Image (cartoon, rainbow, N blue to C red; front, side, top):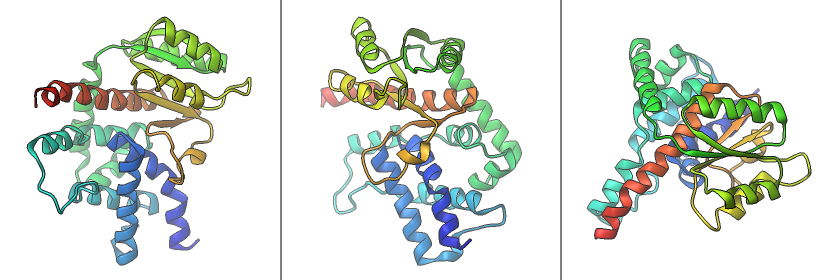
Length: 268
């Protein structure tokens, strides 16, 4: 397999990680594009000592730490813009936790990616664990037609301290439940058994109120192409509890930062 084929093989999940770090598709994909551009200019940047995937994530992290892709360098940055960017930076502890829980790297691989030692990685994940424990509880709507998966998600969400307002198995059920009580977080399967779409249900709900959404699918590569509007937060089936916990927490992290900025913006 050529180097370009190796890179292409791992791009979808790198996009997933990048979107989770930035909180949206556009920014995440822009950082991945910046990494690819750097790699095209200098192929030796890819460190394959621990495999191509680990090397790609390590190179991406170097780009992430050194470049503000969305910053307009022709305009001075205002204090408000600077505060907004800083508040949206995913802390190192969460980076370590996402690499372990979402992407499934070992502690040794995470240490290599972040240029830390294993002891530091363990300390970082401990910090992330304490952040998760202090996460503000919210009301969660689950859109999932598979009974056992829905039960697993409901149990997991409750164990994280959240309240489940209901489980919707169709597009129609999701709309009806959300009208009964507005959720603070949605966990949604993309393709439902009756032929309806969890993605369409979420898009309809987002027309009336803002809420962080984590999509769950058995075919994540279909929604990580970067060629069309795609989910920012995505986990794949089968999932591990830590994976759902990490991504749900990250989605709430961005929502909380957005809310914290609102009074400051209004005052100005």
